[in-house]
Image (cartoon, rainbow, N blue to C red):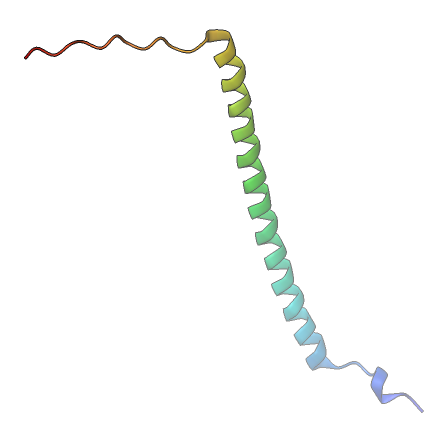
Length: 71
């Protein structure tokens, strides 16, 4: 005698297929956001390091002298 709990259930199969497709779509969206954020953070860190090193070499700009106003 076969066990009825081990029979294939078409409704469960459809439900799991839908759940897997939703999970895969969410995984793709999350992976895209993580990649975009990490790329932005890396670009910002590179830009900050470049400004730090070139700023040390060049130095701070001298302020322009202020002109006195006529009264």
